[in-house]
Image (cartoon, rainbow over all chains, first blue to last red; front, side, top):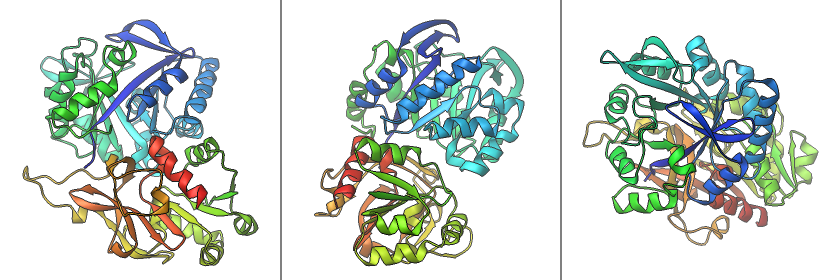
Length: 251
Length: 207
């Protein structure tokens, strides 16, 4: 059977992997190429790279890192951060990305989802969403979780899939960095409305959180950063644990 | 020398990078002479069947591919490249394929059973799935039963049991790999399947 996927997320700034808590307070962690190699050897099913740089020079550095990773690590690579146009899709795909993740760029211009899906296929377009509860409703946030767009997040997910997004990354701002488990209520609400794979993000602190996640049948993958980067959880150990809990994993 | 056929479909970065990683000399080409001169040929592909077969035919390389494989030259079709080897596809209409593998390409969704919760499994079939292997296939000499490979597809090969050499379960048996003589195809992406995928490519290089 198809396995549940474990995906480490690498935020890259100025050529280094960094990790923030609740989207703020960024800490330097490691060299992205070394880290990607480590994860590949230790059971990661896929890698997500977010380019959180701003300048043109840093973007070139990011492209070089991506090319380096894609030349030696042969598992699926998703790249996000600063994807606003089809040229941005083209730029990262040429450096070896397999999937392109859109977030704020799709909020500014939702047509980018359709254009990307049409040119590169649905499987290539990952819609990443940062969601937070505001007055009891799930609202979509932009700019790395700083700005409330006022958009209903559940509707945004449905629209995104209709436009051609092949997978969704659902990141709960409410649980991000808190380490008390994934936001199952939010995730289930989205899973009930779409039929594409869902990658859950935000809130994993221990192994049990992943087994809880995968007891929800609509969940396909769990994504995390700091707990993997700081070696609080080793992905191979996590997978051994999940297998014992009856979850199908690749070991 | 491995000739990777370039007909304007899909991203060849990972495929060429993985062949290079394995130390294989590779040329990405749409030239008849270079395909004739190569020891083996790879037909990649991502996207829609109708568009891809039209683009492949437009290169004028179909006769060369059929001739070269007829002489026993190993060919590997990957993902949509595998699907093009089949007799026909029912992806949005009915389209004729190369006919090197017996069988047809059909929507996964159409054949999926309804589960106990009233839902079918998701399409596309995306992710890592374990392989059931036909024994003594040279393509699999470095891998074992139950190894995982990476799939991304919404259509699959069926009525092709005679040529099937590997499959994966997704409520239905998904055709994972096919073979007819020296013509091979994988529905999954060996260039994205970690060390298992590299070991399949290594075996292909050594055929």
